[in-house]
Image (cartoon, rainbow, N blue to C red; front, side, top):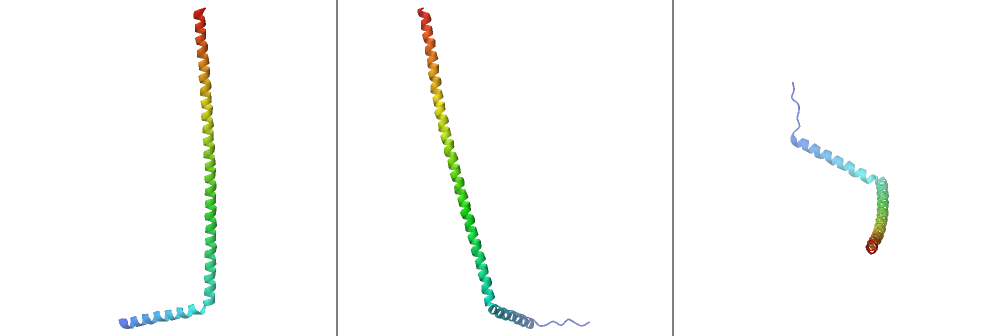
Length: 120
């Protein structure tokens, strides 16, 4: 059997460097040839990015408006609850005063009845 022919290391390095140079040359010539197409693609991408940014800004504005609406609704509910509590407290105080007046009237009536029994 014959041995596999192996190229020397220097030759392999040189062929790899030549291949890299060829690829670089192909890329450089290709990128300069499509300037109009490249510019149009770049403009399309920029338009897409700007549209996305506008949509994001609109969503953020809508989210903030909704948050403000919810906050005002919650503030209105808190104010209503505070007014209800104040009204309930006033009613409870009025009932307590009326009950005290009733109890005093009943106590006074018992006292007057007791005095009338002792006198008479």
